[in-house]
Image (cartoon, rainbow, N blue to C red):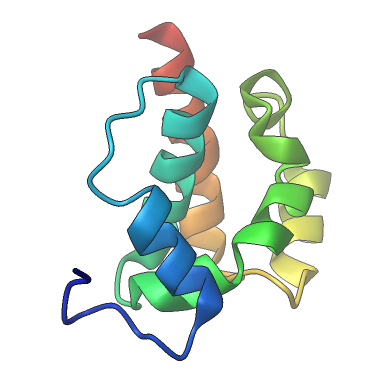
Length: 105
């Protein structure tokens, strides 16, 4: 049985609900991906972020934390110009900062 919040008209959302939501996943790469995506969700719907997940994966180098922690001003500018992701400079900078903290943990 699916939750009422699951938009049945969005295949990505249904797949997320059925295969990921509420399932334990302790893989660091997956957890880092969720940290990045959740930080971009602030003020938006999860469905909005989920619809851009594939593009985030490309823009964020497959969520390779060792690459993300080394993002520089040029990469930040590139991300800010990427129309396929959420282009909030503060959220982009926070994702890099969060990557460094996540890596240290």
